[in-house]
Length: 159
Image (cartoon, rainbow, N blue to C red; front, side, top):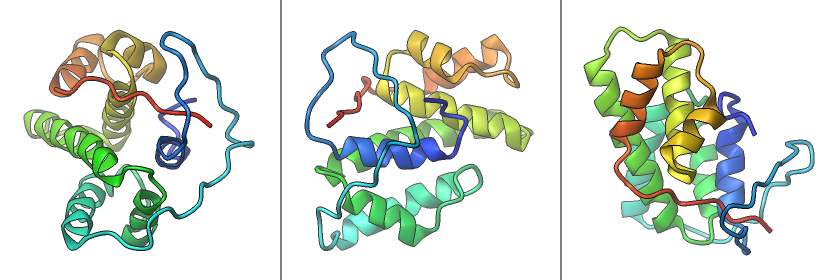
């Protein structure tokens, strides 16, 4: 899975809604052609959830071209929307902190920052760095991005 590809956002939301966990240390390679959108699991979201998701979508709007409606539907597919919202809020906070420190990043660099944070949300920093494989950020910059993410990894579950 290549997080630089915007498809990963959808994969992350889809896979987070799956039921079974992959054993620790076991790698899973996903073919985007075989991944299917999961069902809507929640008819609605609370107004508080919608407000939180709206902030997340606005934060990543430049690097993830998903509409608010698409983003809300993706969270409605999650088995535990509150858990997933919290993960994305942690990513958004790290993204915003890094961008405040580096206000002149190019679009390509911002996409790499997002990819690093998305990977980091699911795995330890070293694995996230290898998974995202940034080319427009220096190794030092990539480490600084990863240092902004303050939560433990929340691995995806796969069905």
